[in-house]
Image (cartoon, rainbow, N blue to C red; front, side):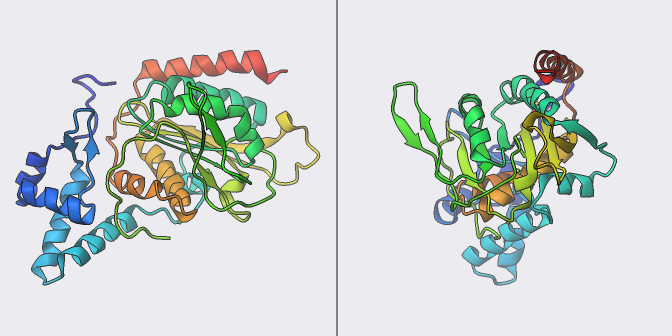
Length: 330
């Protein structure tokens, strides 16, 4: 989808940002060094890139300064206002998509079918997208354990990856050289319904840019978190966006695992995908995961409205059919 007829979201150099706001590049760099703002994306070359949303926040800082507000306070207020505008009202990806996008159809699907759809999104979108933000919710840590190696591979090509479950201890990942690393996680909690993937405290200001993580960041869901009943896969990227989220119907304690039924919806529209990603990032931030704070800042802007190209959607559909045929009846 990276062609002239379907460009990605606009990105700005520091010179572009300076031209649109009237703030000199040297001043913008000083703000970033002292206040962690503006928080740019970094290309492999180290060059800064900004979004159109950054222009509005910088202009808001300027307006507050003109009213006599101290710079550090103006930055905090402007950033908090931007986050507030994008802040979801429901700590549930499924509920937020149903609230904001009621036209999205919801279907009752068995877990075996959801597995096929999840794997297809992971293979055709998550693994091929340009440095996506990835979110996967698994409810119970034993379900994440079954998918851990797969998600660690996806994290290698992602800008940031978050996995959600009722982790009782931080997951351990093994690198290619045999070393082990304990992933970060929120406070431990116990007990959850058995289901496969499902997904706020207001931040004060964005963190300083950090090198991209190459392993998933684990997020422990508290016992009463709505996302403990959800199955979610979200891929938010400029070129390939997709979201699948499902809510497990209650009263299925005696139902065989693969036959449990979920109210499910999915989309490749960038707007709803961004809304689902914001919910996931907010839940991670509320769980005390510091890595979520700059991600929330990045997700505050609106995505490019262009849809995924038909070839990508067709490939995903074909992959779903293949996986359903291969696994769903077992």
